[in-house]
Length: 146
Image (tube, rainbow, N blue to C red):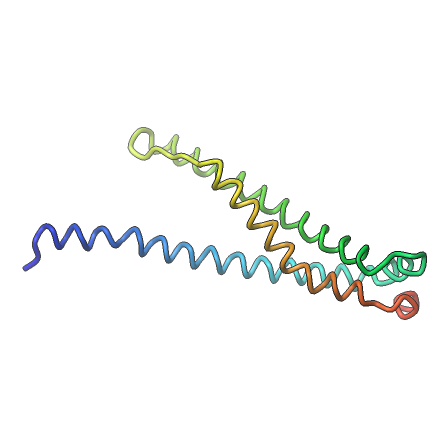
């Protein structure tokens, strides 16, 4: 037989389980998004090999090329983060309007900052490899690339 206290204890574990599941889904989404950003940046490096060669031939240092591609990667993921935060905020407001007083919604400012910050960090982290690859290109080989 289960008592009411036992039932309440079991019901108290449900939010923790949901939090773990949603955290896992969120982490997996960040990983997949990061891999997508890395692939986009690798394609960008390949398509712009000649441009990189020209920049290096006229005096750009490795750090300049590295900064260019990491900044580009962070910008792409930051814009995606802003769109995601806006979508989440809009969805929260929509649920709040649809549910009325039964389910009030609130999006704290720290959550908005955390979402945008994580998106930008993922762009920086997954943009490092393509940026290093671009920075290591030999200018002579890059200028010959077709």
